[in-house]
Length: 474
Image 1 (cartoon, rainbow, N blue to C red):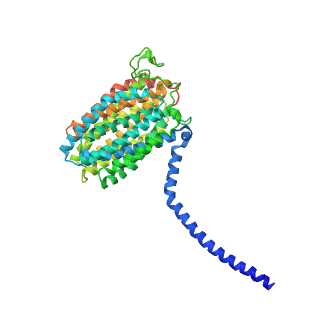
Image 2 (spheres, one colour):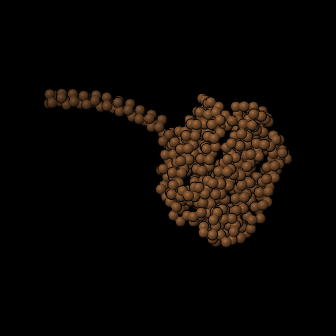
Image 3 (tube, rainbow, N blue to C red):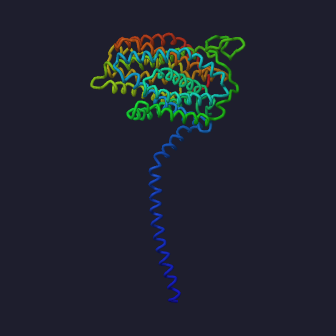
């Protein structure tokens, strides 16, 4: 028995040692895995959180979630190019020379864009079966143009201006197609205004995250934000083809005609109208578009006017860069807040929202003109951002409510093109204005007042007609 026990004991001892060694290595490898998971979790956890948010309420099943993520990528790439161009054209030279440079930039890029913009919508109407390819082409074009701009920034070449124009046109083309695509990916539990607010909010959040990264890349060297834009837009090009195939479906669609012509209110008549315009959408949509154009004009005006005004007369105790940053953050926060509020509102009369927010902006502009000061400038920027977001969401709601489904995507494309043209006009006026805050805000208040008064009667008349028989739009 002793002999019998000896092997058993030896085995037991040997087994125990083996277990000790195995347990030690197991604990080490387990610790390594735990550390790996801890280091990996911020990335995977954040990714899962983003995916959960973008795919909520049926957006994942309908394909809207992927579009939301794609728009976030688009926003990050655009801000990289914006930071690179702003530092090159605006911040690198004295104010007087900067005004000349920006005016030249606007003349070479924005002026041709006003000619090209009206063509974008009708041209994209001819590509109903290739929307994913169109968005991918817009992404790839901006990736290649970012490399061209990076070379121009390094050498000071005039290639900067035509390349910037191409990037602008490609960006707006993407925006027009994206607006036309959203109705195709609408989940059953989300209205169009909520879907657009979620897409827009994703772009704004991505812009806020990418902006400081772009600033850090710019600290390394002027071309580096453009290299970052190249990588982002290449990724966006690939993501375009992961959108739901129904994006390319044109079943049941036709061209929108934008006017309040009673003969065209119930559907398109392509044989009767040789040149499509903004018709068939009713008086509410056309007046809402006019009010939104006034707000978009204000956005372009403030972008350029405040850029030079605050550079020449920064806020008390702050540098020009910090002053511009404060106003930019105020406008961005206002825009994001307006988008978030728009997604929560449940309102059967979007006309009343538009009338209210335009009046709010008008009051803020008048106050800034009468009592010009740093705080009021930031408040006006935040108010303009907030109200522009709400007004745009309300316009989307009216298009959903009043435009026949057959022509809804085309109406989105054409309305977005018109709003971009209003922004260009506001920016041009903002550059040539004297750097006098009271004078500039007085002009802004006048334009907003004109837009409000010319659309007020039509919007209120549309709201008074009642919306009881119409579907909810928010």
